[in-house]
Length: 144
Image (cartoon, one colour):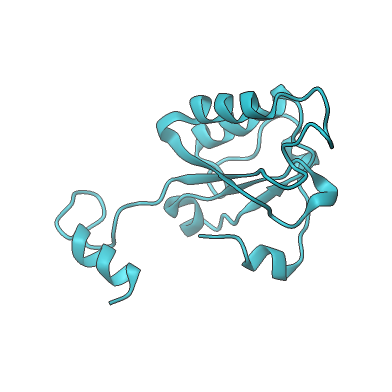
């Protein structure tokens, strides 16, 4: 049985989703472990502090996770904001952000997640200027 089938069977009878499985939240994937998040590439940036501030600011509105490498090192620090189930149904797709180095960018990402994320809300502030394009190979390699 596939994961989706297990979720569908396991979630039947829960309010709000009627057998479709639990709604997926907005997911924020933060690149860490290669050049993103290192003092060698970005001295003076409190990478661990930014990650914790992002997790705290997003709270229950989404899920924040770190991965070792998103293979887009030229744009470090890279963050991908993936839509919730509702956002994807509304046409939202993952948005790749590059050069996420300043605290105000962390705050804007958290505000966007709180507002519903891709498909449900426009990115606040200057985040639209941080959007990057990635190769299909890289984009398809991102864990769901």
